[in-house]
Amino acid sequence: MAKPLIVNVLELLRRPGSTKDVDAAVSSADIEFGDDRITDKPVRVNVHLESLTDGVSVTGSVHAAWHGECRRCLVPMNRDIEVAVTEMYQVVVQDPDAHAIELDQINLLPMVRENVLLALPLAPLCVESCAGLCPSCGVNRNDTPCACEEPPADNRWDALDSLKSRLSDSPEG
Image (cartoon, rainbow, N blue to C red; front, side, top):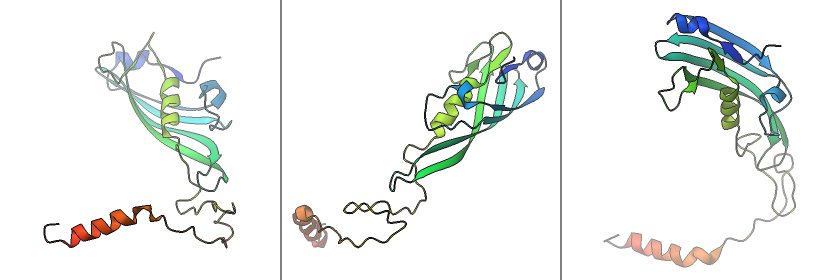
């Protein structure tokens, strides 16, 4: 069985300016992300390859699904992610950011893996305005208003605040 993310570019290399489109759905297990947040849904790769005089330009998008918890309220989340990709492949790698073309083939797998993993949020939020959990009683403040009293203000900074206000009131300040 042919691997869907290994693309033969022999014809592209022979004719600069020629193009090729790749549209594939690949099992996330085949990509071997090494990250439990990526779901078992297929990863969709839609890229456009264009032959240039110094290599092959790859542009397009990758779609994947991930799951996790909101960092504030710990509610489980399932989301889709779309990543725009732009990479350069060269037979003789001259650009430090370029990937190698080996045996007239481009392996898109490392590009897909790297771009999806870098696009995953480090601290995801269910919604931007998530109120989180109450630190006292643990209720999800997005669902239920909390009856707990606000903790007393931290007075350790009062001396510095008064000094700051005196300095800003002075004519030299």
